[in-house]
Length: 631
Ligand code: ADP
Image (cartoon, rainbow, N blue to C red; front, side, top):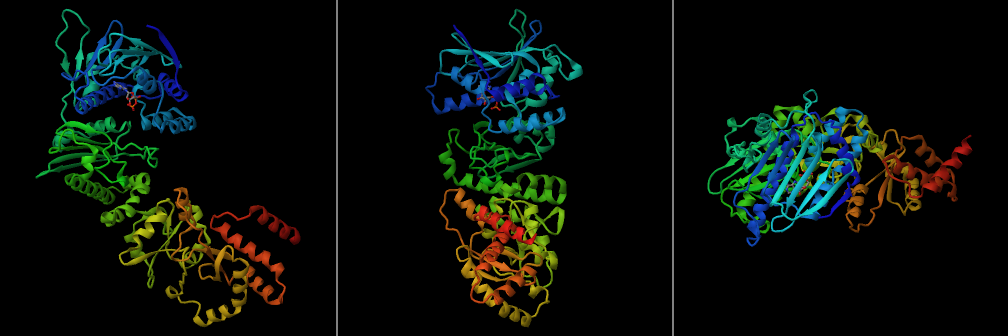
């Protein structure tokens, strides 16, 4: 039948180049990847047959075979699983659908050296293509279960591949590698060597639940195929029987991450509803953690049989980065997502798993501060979503949460530590939200707090805007934004007296009232500030209003929210404000010249907190005029 030639998609081509000029030193992992794909294919076939028993497929003896031919220097990994149709081969093998790949390639271009590139490959994993680390040609022969025709795919990894329909392919997939000459100095071993294959399978794939058999090329004296893996489910074995490395390999199989996990969590539940869980916290956040199509890597098994991937019923969304296996003894083999959603045992399981993950992180925090710091850096922004969505575990989440603060440059603080450091008379826990630590620290809202040495939490994740309101208080102390409502720090540090304040209020009453009229479109009030020491003015939100960042967030989600007018605060200790007040009092009835100054003062306050002028061109014009006059 006709052979057609196709070009690899650009991203795929770039990846292939990398594999061919392999920068990844541990080339043995290619076999782990092919076996992992074969195992997935057997899982998929079993499920397909379970859902539709009219499917014309052979499920009598599911297994994986590895066959080497020393003379031809080929190695074949064969499974009798689900297989692929002609279209699927083109789609799945010819292109790279993984959403992280574009990002991966971008970073790869930026990675200057080989070590950087190797780290990146490890971070993403490249599955099937890793075969090109050890082979200069790969062919794949496959037939989708239930279909009569098969497909042959073949490529030398150099930009094109061929596809051909074939009549007589066995069900499942066989991947044949035409091996490069062995080059042990570059970690390219002789993969036709039986002991090498045995070693790799034992090391990386022992737990695979299907038999992996080593078969000899057909011949008269070919011995019985030997099964290389123990197939023992790691989660069902006792802790001291299993090495960390074995756990890590299971993690890699499930997650498609090539790096070790940060933490392994085991849980055995006995009793009326029995289950075992083996969970992993990755060491790095995936690139698509905040996108809709993020795949969760939590697999559900029933009595050692794989049931589904991405089982989102088992953990709440704010723990969606956790990978692993949950094996329940008492569920039906054809349990569906709909059933899971309603099952009270599943709900109880989810609750227990959630608590277990949180308590593990809490323990990590006390026992291994560095590992905890990695955890929080990678996943803190996701975990904080739970403060909004999971009221039941709020305290447990707060107990593992930490925050940047003006208390220290590098180290983060807990809320409990913050409360311990609170000054005498300080009632509230202060925070400020914003886009970056630098923007927040330099915000005018911070001035009085800095001057008085009052600690402020610096919150820079988008979710911070939301959870602070949802949580409200901690240990009886209110969480208060330094950019919201009236802030009066004098109660905490007697300096200016009431009499002084009253006098100030009198002096400025006229100016404040007039400015409010002039700026009525943008602000709802103009008042004197007790938060400023350096800047002339700042804008703040009313205690009950949404902050501008939150308004933008709702808009981005497509919700209509009215723009809340804000409050302009002036610093009576600043020469510009004092001068403006004098000019206001001396101007008599015609104050048109002062209007522009009032407008500029407001725009400066907006700029200082990182906002945009309403009319940038007009702002530039007004400032330029004034600069010119000053020359
Ligand atoms: P990944 O396994 O990370 O998705 P791969 O490049 O290894 O990426 O494989 C791409 C896709 O090709 C797989 O997701 C699967 O759908 C399909 N595939 C690969 N190997 C097999 C196989 N042995 N049997 C059936 N499908 C396979």
